Image (cartoon, rainbow, N blue to C red; front, side, top):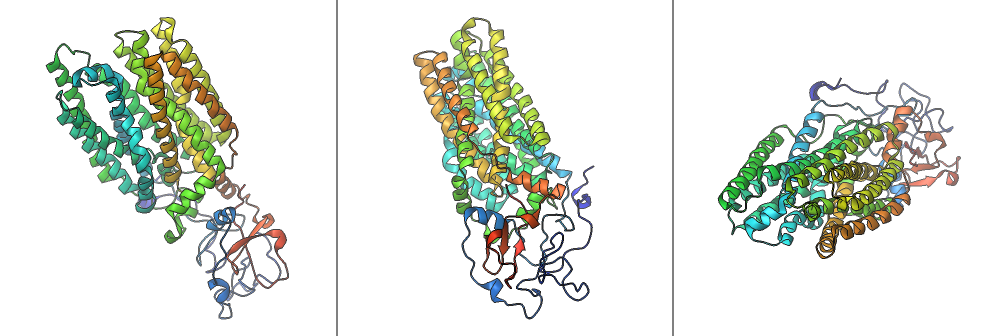
Length: 567
């Protein structure tokens, strides 16, 4: 059972902290590199630099202080996982010690608060589009104007994602959460002043602020899951955080048609209904902002996993946001995932934005049922998200699960497309639910897969880039599908999305599954790191990783074994 922050349980290995300046290694060390003196010298099983102790006055300072040779990308990733400071502990293998880890009970409160204000933000995204014909009549604007109330979320995300992820990486989780919740609250209150027919620009202003708030929200699920939750629950936690956003979309499909029925023949009643929806949203946003200020913390007292312990122990000065971005774009599997995630999520955004127009083309006067179909789509997706998160925590089969869900989403989109015009709206409910189960269920898979193949890069940065790709594809798909729907038919617009989703399947199949974070946690848990047989060593005298085959066993310079085996 998890304990409060000040009484957290721990998973500390038995024994005492390692001797200052020494790295414990399993089994026997190379001859001549280990001191047998356990009383006055370094502990047995510890390597000494250049054959002597770091603490010895004979230790050559130049070996440690000389300039380091720049590392290759793979060597740099490995070197970042090495202990750098005296007394720093290493990932556990047999006979070694690990940093203290614990699970905080507060993690559930942090996850709940985030999920709720993310839900309100998603509600505000879709609240116009699902009753687009009502707002067109009230503000006397075109359907494209109403579509832009949704697309502004996508448009704002692209230029702001880089400063937002920089803020998350350099200023932390709490400040980012406060900005997301605060701007969401402010935008909601501004929209309360737009309930007059000539004030469309005011409602657009409020929606713009909510769209900026979204930039500080969408990238947090995987970051919150990694920082607060343990290895056996991290995927489920990420899925739950994404679930809040999906739930907001579901409520956005359900409530607006009920709260604001199509009463355009009575403008005063229509304005009153719109005002009720806006003020209700503002009240909930304000409450959640207050809870965020009071209860949202930066991180738990102790890291929840060994992978987090390694990252948190890294010196802050070594992190470079620009370098992290470059590393991500040099990672070919991540670039492929970036494209495929953008295609799938962009297609979901496009279908959600245009759902009212698609349904009303075949079923006139069914605004309420259009909202219920959207609700069915998202609720089914929420179930899919949770099941996918649980499945990943149990199997860790990231690529296979991602590819399977992608294929099933494509099949669901094809079925949805060719059953729209059958004249039976109940069929649309069923096919919409099938589509949503897989399409929306894919969202947390992309986040978690990205964290695995890009570790130890920041979760916020990788998630932010995924969301940026989704917004770009979302804008392009919404404009293209909207044009095809209005000029031809919804079938043409849906086929357009099917073609792109098929391309996404091919690219997903090409992604190399390299689960770096999972390998570290698994190695620590099972003691199966096998450092002694590693292909690489870290030579402190030259400051870089060197292949095992290049090491001269009789050379006086000592090397440290890499404590993790990255696949």
